[in-house]
Image (cartoon, rainbow, N blue to C red):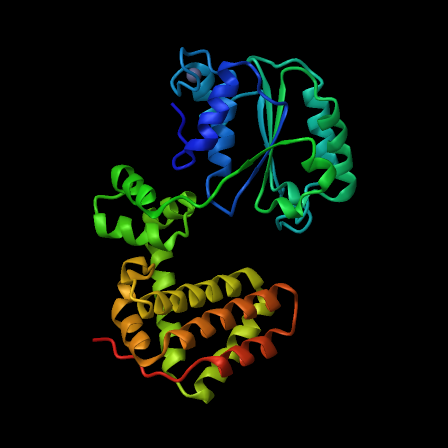
Length: 339
Ligand SMILES: [Zn+2]
């Protein structure tokens, strides 16, 4: 059985290709972080080596060894730890690619296919990418290379053109909620709230269900969002300064916080438009409703745009303090009532 959930179209196309014996030698799976790219790639690795009746059966020795990371013919290549600095490297090195090339020139050791999964193909430096290109151009028999990337736009066109593309879209909140409720929690309300917060990313949703501290951190940050919206300009500028300082230490963490701002204001907008059933931050309904009632829909929509613009500018390395202060000035004045 395929373990991938919520990507039926991709799964169907792949099982058909397997049955008809016309699997490609190179795939590029794209989709946002934690949407299910690696799950699908591991399903493919199982399916390509399974000895059960309906691959991937999940229970034969081949399938089980892939699942347990013990299969000698299945490799995942990603960012490695730098032994000098103890930090994660930011690129996949040419040595890693050469290592793969040596590997794929050999016959599979115990399975039917060698499967190499590149996690984050946008992290290949040009030299490494060109080297990989050679393997993609003349793929050895019995080798399947699966490249994963968040954005097809970040992948070299020469690589792109040699792969069969599989684009994974965000999964519907209901499918995610059902899956969480079936396998990961007995709390239906929690499953539904996490599903809405996940933005269609199953991997994120599963982690959030299993790690209460992740949800607590989000809740703390949403408290800050609501306090900042309610506060005067002085309070907002203090927040801007603090956020800008944190940005220089770790961009990702601040961009995540701004994503919460974006989601919160999006919720205000959908309530304002009379569609409360579309709210993501369900536990914040009272504050969202009071904000929506104090503003016109056009003001809520303008704020959503302002937050999005701030995120875009930060990603393009514009001075963080200026960007966030500008955003603070654009926030409408509202006093949030929680009841
Ligand atoms: Zn199997």
